[in-house]
Image 1 (cartoon, rainbow, N blue to C red):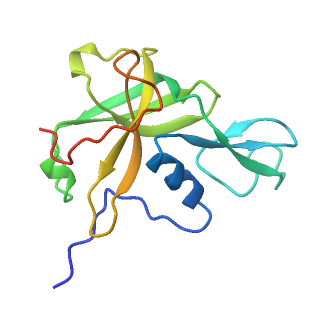
Image 2: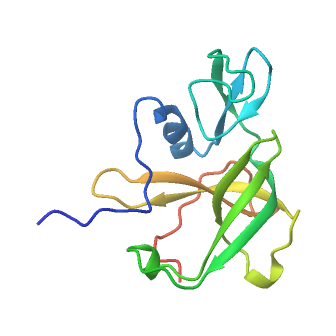
Length: 155
C-alpha cells in the first residue's frame, strides 16, 4: 500500500528546483526583477510589480522580522496533528518580501511583532532524500543561513 500523501511537504518542479536545492545547502533564495529591482516571493516567472519576465534568483540574507503569527493547537490533517502546537507565521524578509513560514525554537510567550528572526533549515524525512524547508527562529540563536536538522517530531 502506498504511503499516505504528505500535505506538509512542498511540491517541487523544474521552476522552483533552485529554491529547494539552495535550501538543502542552508540558503534562502528570493526572486528579484532586473527591470525594476524589486524583490518578491513566492517564486514567479515574472515580476508582480512591473510584469517584466527579466527576473532571477538571488540569495537572501536570511534576516527577517515577525509580521504576524498564530499558534496552532489543533490540526486534524496528517502529519500536522502530530506536531501541534506549532507556530505558523508571516515574516518580512530584510529584502522586502513577506514569506509564510513556521517559527521554531521560541516559546509562544516570547513572540513579539517586529522581533528579529533568522532563517534555519528543517529537513523533513521523506521516502526519498528528504526536503529542506526554510523556517525561522529568533536571531542570535545560531549562525544565520546555517543548515540545521530538526526531527519532524519536535514535541
